[in-house]
Length: 336
Image 1 (tube, rainbow, N blue to C red):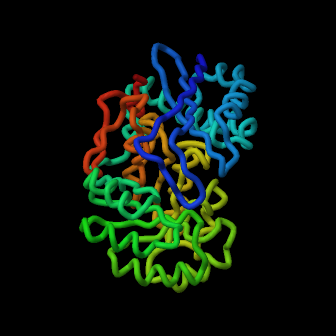
Image 2 (spheres, rainbow, N blue to C red; image 1 turned 45 degrees about the vertical axis):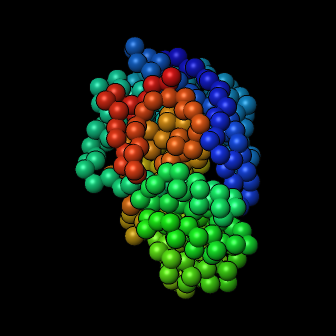
């Protein structure tokens, strides 16, 4: 098996702002694994919040190139277990590698990934489309630019309720709110009351990731369901979220790929937690991998590639929240 590492700078259509940062360009690392006339692709993007850079991921993968290239017939689960000890300090790199290997494995089997997993795709959830923080007028303009059935609205400003009221004047779409750790306890409880009146479905990560006492208070008293994001990173975090959140948003890059994400989804279901998978700002390489998990999810946020001015790959198609799969096997990705 041959390991090929590619680096990209993904240009966004608009400056993308959340409660802690703004970006115009998103550095991304693509892993390509070649074997038996097939290629599998995986992706992970840089992330300053988690101290991850493309150069770091590349260095960590190069350090185990021989181990990676010696793999051939292992299942994705066996391969993940083999490389995990060497990449457990860099789950982003592990994600790109696991995604590429899982994609390659399915292609060599002549199956789409959801077929390999024996998932029924008939009742897949719709993806939301994200509106980043901006002036109220610009947020309204961004929403009007792309009519959509579900919007995720980034908040964490002094005008949060005014923003949602202004957006609501222009659409009947479902709203989801993501504060990215930007609120306090009382602020969350008060905002939840107002936001419920405005047709908000749930709140995502209102408090800081490690404020477990605060999360417990919110869980008990919020009039809206609350979904964990920054508080749910790896497999061990799912059980911590029980009785602190109503559901978990699993990010492939944070947990180390598709293989552990599938385990996290099953663990969440056993605990009665709602299941969601989210994306970073990434290309159709990462987004197409998420698409094959849809039958297992209650909610999904896989709009990352829609936020780019130019995609680097072809894969799943998304129209009005509905995901259409590629005719290709594996994740269905091909680099442009």
